[in-house]
Amino acid sequence: MGVSQAQDWVLLAYKLPRIPSTPRSAVWRKLKRLGVGWISDGLVALPADPRTREQLEWIAEEITDNGGEAALWLGRPLEASAAVAVAERMNAAVAAEYDGLAAEADAASAADPSARRRAVIRLRRELHRIQGRDFFACPAGEAARRAVEHLAATGTVPVRP
Amino acid sequence: MKWATRPGVHVDRAACTWLIRRFIDPNAEFVFAADIEAVPADATPFDMRGAALGHHEGRCSFETALTAYDLTADPALEEIGRIVHEADLADDRYDAPVAAGLDVLIRGLTLTGSSDYDTLAITHKLFDGLYEHRRRQLITGRPPA
Image 1 (tube, chains in turn red, cyan):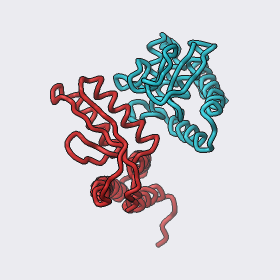
Image 2 (image 1 turned 180 degrees about the horizontal axis):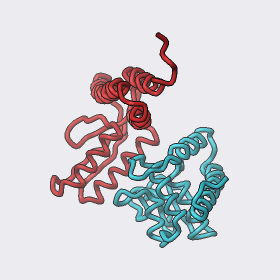
Image 3 (image 1 turned 120 degrees about the vertical axis):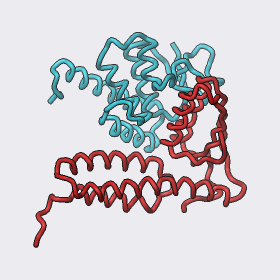
């Protein structure tokens, strides 16, 4: 996995009241969509680049707008194993998403042509979303991509006996 | 007037500077500051953490600025707001297929090492075109040829 000790991480340490629960779950959903690594309760991390930094900055703003506390840090692990552990959890999460997507694509190949067409559009979109949070080139991504493209090609070429 | 934002502009800041210069303050002067503490006292900060013209209640800075400066009556601007929102946040709040292309174009432009001012000169042209396109589509009800 492409994790090195030299990799900078942007870390968001936050506290948000449990009640009301709506802002809390909105923040949780956004962090999930970004694909953050969860280091501990209230501490999440992403490999640092201008985009991830900005994304976490806006979530920090949302947390403070909702009466919580949020602080952003830029950090580097002293032990490579610490970063590997976080990256492995992140990778396992996207791998599960890719596998689910590939299974959906396989299942949709039995559907009628118009349902198949709709499934291709939806699954391609979903694939792009997962790729957006795949920070370490998860190997399951290629299989998911092929499954969706296979579905797209299904029925376009006459099958020979 | 002076307006301040973070350097390394991307879609939301590019769109805000275009909106400011074209609809709010034709003589706008843009300066860059790393964070709100570094913004000169005579400048209005935007698209930075802690600024009123920032991301609030799930809106991107461009959408916040539309509301703050009473520009929501222009449906073409509202639509650009939805495109910028999806290009910046990609949270599927809106159906804006143009957003993905806009995001890639501006991100690519910043990778060529173009300065923030050069980037803005180009993106202002892009947003002029996008505005004209959406405006004509709204008038005729069809994508312009």
